[in-house]
Length: 214
Image: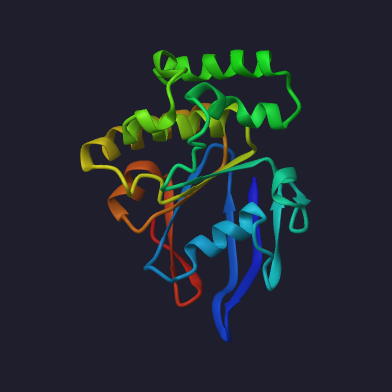
């Protein structure tokens, strides 16, 4: 379980996050809504280890990981711009995380090919990522996130750059994959329709505090 306890953070001299409490269980998708500038992405960065909170702590499965660097948390973070490596082909984008974990390239690529096949992308393995459509790039990003078997998945507006029809199909696909993997997932979005389509429950960040929506 992912557990945020008493998280606070400032933006300049102003309080951005105030005494945030949030628990996300295994396989649960929690949507975090709120207007631009409300601190959603800041909270996600704190969970990922990219920022330290002013006060409070981040726990996972009963362990305080607040001071752990991002690479030791084994969380996967996905952005709206996919953050794929343009100089690598699809296969090596997906294999990258395994190679960083010191797996041999041949084994990492074999696992990456299996993951691409699972997502219907095996025929694109040798293509450069910039030859793919937006939806295909997002599936590559998901494959790259899932292949390292992350302990939690953090999604920051993952579908906002895509057209409406593609967003709808990918929401369903992502939800199915997350449930199959059993990962606690935090979805940052400004779109309540997207939240209702993907999340088991939702909270809103407003004036630095969380309130339950459903």
